[in-house]
Length: 323
Image (cartoon, rainbow, N blue to C red; front, side):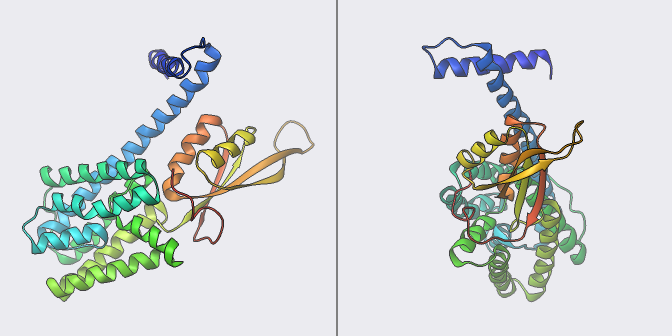
């Protein structure tokens, strides 16, 4: 990091501490840790924003380069928007926002207002891209439209999720219903899309609906490839010398439960093993970016092992809000 940028961070940290503790004299010992936290937050914000931007451009390409010019539809909120665009005179860019608003209101209640605001900004930027950016029409072959239109749309959805946001609100509805009805998120998404494709077959044609199913499958597989599925949880094992601070962060900031394993360390110059606490927790895919940010604030050298968890029962993860 450049010394100029470091000085800016130190200045920001000092002013923040002075604002919070106006009656106390602020020392460098207090400023440096906060400046480091601000640096980590800034670095992760840039990374997440890059993911979201790539997702927006990819989804816009899938919509305007393949689906929209050929009157194809997809599943989810995007599919509903495309279906309405085919039967009304409303521009798709407006429909993308209007259709997603109810889902994002639900996201604000189910997860957090911050997550909902970030998602509506993402969707609004996608609407601007769809409205103003002139993507070339790539092909008129129905099979290629369905496969590659779904691919680029799925890539966009997946990259946005990697950045901690969504561009299709039906995932939020699916997560909420899965908690209420005790069924998997994948089953909920399937039911929602069956309804959408049924309307597509009735309003447009059975052939369009069949191609829409192919588009949806292509998009869904691409999302699986990018983020390993919205319905899957991530089991995270953390090994760090600062395990007490990490445990406190997981419980207080992320509001997640964790388990502490009593382990033995085997790496080092000594031939004998040594005691070491190991933290295990489970988070959703949308919380993973936040978890990495908070871990880096405490220990950038922490050893982290992540594994996919298809579904879980009990515990706190399905009851606590996303932070």
